[in-house]
Amino acid sequence: MAAIAADDARTVRRFPPALSLILVALALGAAVGPAAAQSLIWKRYMESATTAAAAGRRADAEGLLRAALREAEAPGSNPDALFATLRALGDLYWSAQRYADAEAAMVRMLAVQESIVGSSHPALAASLVRLARTYRMTARDADAERTLGRALKIAQSASPPLEPIAVLNEMGELRRDRGRYADAELYFRQSLALLEAHQQPEPFDLAMLLVNLGHAVHQQQRYAEAEAFERRALALAEASLGPEHVLVAHAASGLALTRSAQGDKAEAERLQRRTLALLDRQAQPDANSLSFTLLKIGDLAYEDGRLGDAESAYARALATCEQSSACDDLRLGAILLGLAESGRKLGKYVEAEGTARRFLGLVERRFGRESLDAALALQVLGRTYLDTGRHAEAEPLLRRGLAIREGFEESLDLATTLRLLAWVDWWRGRHREADEKLSRAIAIIERRRGPLYMELAFVLVERAMLAELTNADADAEPLYGRALAIADAHPKFSLVDLADIMESYARVLRALHRRGEAFVMDGRAAAVRARIPPAQ
Image 1 (tube, helix red, strand yellow):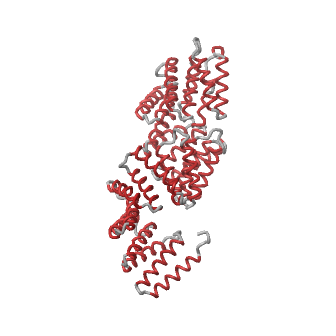
Image 2 (cartoon, helix red, strand yellow):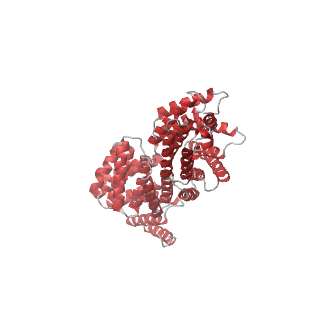
Image 3 (cartoon, rainbow, N blue to C red):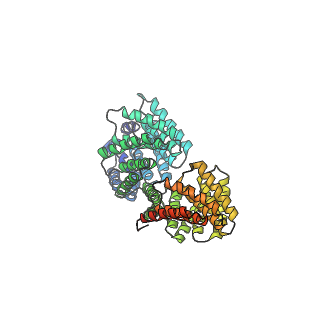
C-alpha cells in the first residue's frame, strides 16, 4: 500500500505520459507490495507484458496482462497486484484508442485503490487524472470536469499539498480539445510555472507541455509566441530524448503548422515530412498522428500546385484514417475534400465523383443537410459534374448549396457558388442571369478581400467573356483592364493566365477598333509567353 501511495504521489506532479509511452507505468517495483506476497507467475506475466508493449506488440501485451489479471484476482492475492494490473491494462487500452475498455479498467482500478488507501488519499489524484483523460477522449466533458475537480481537491488537501501539474494540464487539454484556447492557455501556463519551479524538471513533461502551450497560442493566431514555445519544445525533445523519440514528431508537427500560418510553406512541408518519416519508423506507428501529418502534407502540396503529390498524400491519409478509431469525422472530411479536389483537377473524374459523394454523405450525416459543410460538399460534387459537362446534374446541387449559403454570413464560398451557377446559366443560354451572378460574386470578393485580390481577376475575366459572347465589347474592355491590373500587381501570377488575359484584352481592343493598343497588348502577351517554361 505504501508503495502505491508513494508512486502515485510522485505521478500527480507529472504530466500524463504520451500515447507511445503509456506502459512506462509498469514500474513493477514501485507498484507492487512485498515480493514475498506476490505470485512469481504474476510477476513473469507483467514483465513479459512490459517487454511486448515496449516492442509495439499490443496484442501480445494485452494477452499477458489478462493472464496477470487472472492471477491477481485469485483468492488471497495482494490487492496491490490487482491495482497495478488494472492500471497497466487501462493505459494499454488508452494507447490503442480503445477508450471504452480503458474506462472500464480505470474505473475498476480506482475502486481497488480506494479500498486500499481510502477515498481521500493523495495517491488517488493520479488515477483520477487517468480516468478524466479517458472521459475527454469520449467527449464526456461533465464527467471529466467532475473527476478533475476531485483530483485537484485531493492534491490541494494533501499534507503537504501536492503540485497538481498533471491535473492542471489535463484541464487545459480538455478545454483545448473543445476549442476554448484562451482558457486552455491559462491552465497550461499554470502547469508550466509549477514545472519550471523544479530545479530539474522531467524533459518529457516539460517538452510536452511546451507543445500544448504552443498549440493553444497558435490557435489564437499569436504565431510568434507559438513558434518560440514550439522551437524550445523541439530542441528540448531532441537533446534530452533523442532524435527518434515520438515527442520530436509532435513538436516538429506543431512548428510546421505555425510556419505554414506565417507563410513559410517550404519549411512547413520540410518539418511535416520529417514528422512523417519519424512516425513511420516507430515500432507501432500511431495511425491518428500519421493521418493528420499526411493530410497536412497533402494540403501543402495542393496549395503548391503539385497535385500528384497531394493526391498520394491524401490517399494514404484516408487509408490510415480508416484504421484509427481516433480519426474523427472532421479529419476524415478534410481528407475526402482534398482527395476529391486533387482528383478532379488531375482529370480523374470517376474517382473524384465517388469521393465527393462520400464527402457529401459524411457531412450531411455528421453536420446536417442545411450546414455550411453540406454546402461545401454540394459545391465540390457540382463542380465535378460541371468539369465533365453534366450541367443538368450540377445545377440542382449548386442551387441547393446557394440556398444554404444565403442563410449564413456573406463569404468567399458564396461567391464561388455564384460563379459556378453562372456557368450553368451560361450553358443554358440565360446570359442575363449569369451576368447578375458574376456581378454579385465580384462585389462579394471586393468587400471581403479588396479590389486587388488575385482570384478576383478570374471572375472579371469570366464576366468579360460573357460580355463578348453577347457582343457587348465595350462592357468587356474595362473588365479585362481591371483583371490585367490585378495580375500585374501579383508577381506570382501564373504566366499562362497572364498571357491569356492580355490576348483576350487585345482581341476586345481590336473589336473596338483600337488597333494600336491591341498591337501593343499582343506584343506584351508574346513576351510573357516567351517566358513560360516548356512544361507549362
